[in-house]
Image 1 (cartoon, rainbow, N blue to C red):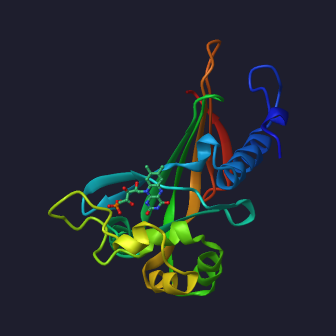
Image 2 (cartoon, helix red, strand yellow; image 1 turned 135 degrees about the horizontal axis):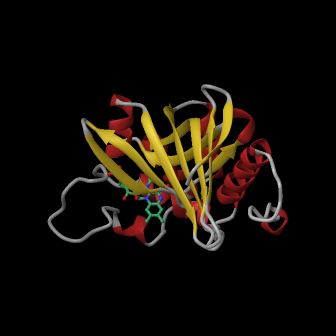
Image 3 (spheres, rainbow, N blue to C red; image 1 turned 90 degrees about the horizontal axis):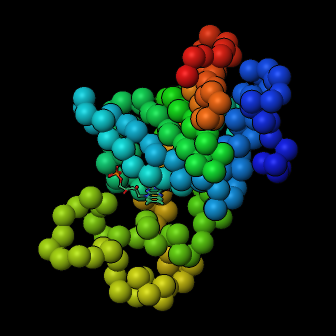
Length: 206
Ligand SMILES: Cc1cc2nc3c(=O)[nH]c(=O)nc-3n(C[C@H](O)[C@H](O)[C@H](O)COP(=O)(O)O)c2cc1C
């Protein structure tokens, strides 16, 4: 997939259906290319009634399922927040293309199942480090620290030893309910809304 083949939104007549499909193509690129702007969305959850946001790495986009996935520690605040309230938003902005996607959905938490085992088996030693802290993410510390034992911080441990991290490894799956697409252009912005609940793809005034 090459972004160069994507629509020029100001000089072509294109349908909102084409645009919807293309938005998912962009998300698939975001999940697979680490340098892509869509690789690191901002994720919003609710902590009681307060908004809570953070950056994550987009690991998978599955257009046929309208699903996005990211990995996280099941001891993290975001996981606990989503267990209480499954409302979730993902915000993407590609500055070079001037495209914003506001993705809204419901979270499904995967832990200790086939999906997490398959993903865990593909993780590298270095990314497994994140799941090997003795204390939970967001625990306060007496000094600046990664929270990792020194041999783990130095990556002086085996793949077998790293298996201990699997008990903390979770996957958040976003079941997408709508996408608000926005393209900025000096001659006039464009905006569209893809509503999967109502099965309607419509243009909007930006
Ligand atoms: C570029 C970048 C990528 C990140 N990717 C992830 C990720 O994929 N999963 C994750 O749990 N945290 C990731 N983080 C850390 C989170 O932004 C956040 O600081 C941490 O997970 C704690 O969030 P919480 O307290 O809301 O759970 C990333 C941070 C940055 C800056």
